[in-house]
Amino acid sequence: MITRRDFIKITAASGALASVGKVSDARATMQPVLPRAEYAFESKRRIPVIAEVDIIVVGGSSRAVAAASAAAMTGCSVFLVAQMPYLGDDICGSFFYEQATNEKLQTALARRIFPGKAYPTPLHV
Image (tube, rainbow, N blue to C red; front, side):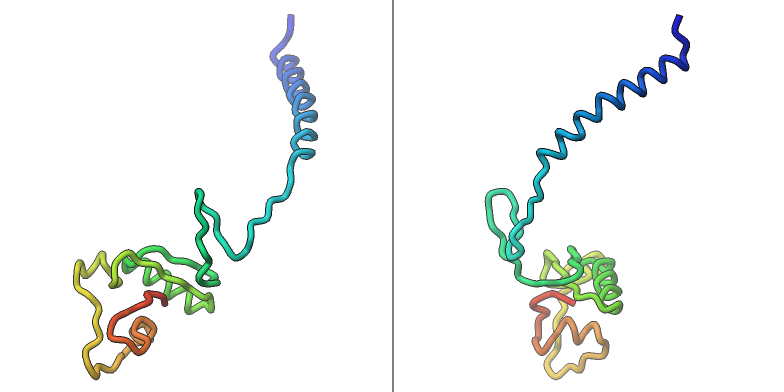
């Protein structure tokens, strides 16, 4: 009669021996694949890389703006992508950010959003 302990030993040894052959076969077939640096490949289309940044923040919510601002304060280059032409859509609904004529921008964030334009385009902080 086989004990539970013997069964576990035999099973572990069999599994180890069976996997050794498979690992060596897998290592022989592995080849490093390096993508071309100037393009990001995605399902049958080539998307050109438009900016080299440390962090990409997707979304225009107040959390996304806070995350992008915090990352920029640490010295990272940040690209903020938003689906709407304004930021903070979770707070302000459909209120658009616009700079009034001769309006002085008071904060660093406002100066980053409106770099000499009346509308915040492109949206990156």
